Amino acid sequence: MLSSTLKSALLTIALIAAYAQSIVAAECTREGLLSAAYSYLAAQSTGQLSALKLSSTNFTYQQNNKVSDIAKGLLSQSYKIDLNRSTADTVACASYTMWISSTGSKPYVVGTQIRHHDNDTSEITMIDTIAATTGDLFFNAKKTLDYIKAEDWTTIMPASSRPSRDVLKAAGDAYLDMWTDAKAADRIPWGTDCERVEGSMYTKPCGGSLPRGGSKKANGMRRYVIDEEAGSVDVLCQFDSLGNMPDSHEIRIVAGKVKYVHTITVGRVG
Image (cartoon, rainbow, N blue to C red; front, side, top):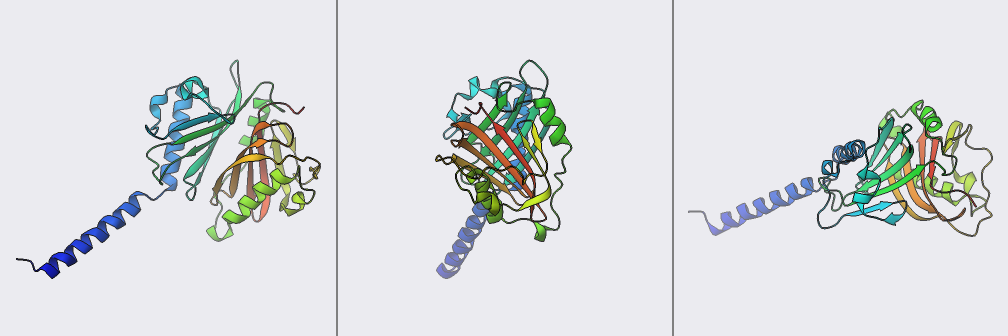
């Protein structure tokens, strides 16, 4: 028979092993985040929600900053996706997916953040979408497609050269602060070859003709997906500085400098 001391030791070992296993199971992985993002793209391309593993107890669908019925939103229709790209944030357990549909009667340029609870990427707890279409600010899906498909989004190597999470978040915040803070633009590490695509309006280099304050309303409702491997930060927000518009701003930093800026804005200024 096992002694009480040995039994106690074995029980302790078993508990430690179970705890370690639970930590591993709860780890938010890049692979899990991207798998969920790909399931979202599959659902969008078919218009079939069955491709998504949504939380049965804790799910929210938000489209253009309004909580909505997913069965009546963009995902209820199928779209031919001409281009897509996804990034992953293992700290926030969230992903960002951009997709463009340039054909059909209603083209779209869309930015979507997908979130998971308790580091469990097997279920989706939130789909948060900014969807711009004909009539929105600078919208032209075909032009946007041509600009973005020419970009280089190769994983930044070596890992030691990737921008930190703090640097990426600071760049995203500084960009959105330019409309209220005259000095915000100077806090952004602009690259001389930076390309900015605002809707379908192309600017190179990015660092010229920037806002220098003037608005009293800060851009709010900021939600972040930060991916150090891609050197990117996406911020979904409410663009209050120019008129309460749903908006996505994505920035990529390579070799310490801003390389790309993308904006998706729903509505028109004024």
